Length: 164
Image 1 (cartoon, rainbow, N blue to C red):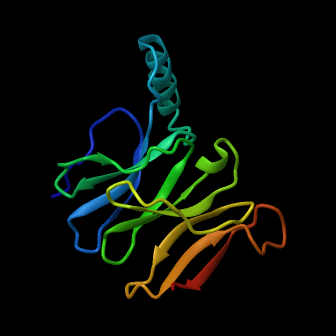
Image 2: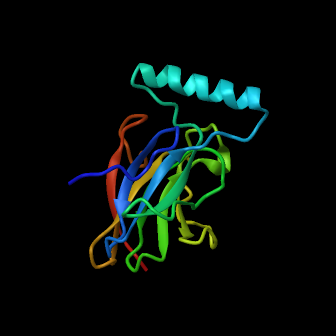
């Protein structure tokens, strides 16, 4: 019995359940505040791309929502592209990828944040692409994708790190 849990204008995706199954963390299109004309223009551009089955993931923030679609809350307010969120074991923090520290650039690093939006912490410092982090079920290991160690530019490899 699938049912829709989001219904606002914009792209919502990349969702993962908390370990207890009660919450979902996901990325969501963020329309920056502006004049009504600016907002209308942003929404028009979004709908135009969507008609071609495309989105521009340059302005996305992280959201958490109860699995029943209630209690939607914005987790990040960083700017840039924030995506690939995943709950830490214990469901009190979220690890994710972002370029907010160099918005518009392709330098994505892993960061962590508390589920109340506090405690932002940088995890990686690679001048390139680090993303798609996921913890092992026991929380001892972190798997992620990165362009580091590639034999050619843009090559993405998978890494596993012991989490301490």
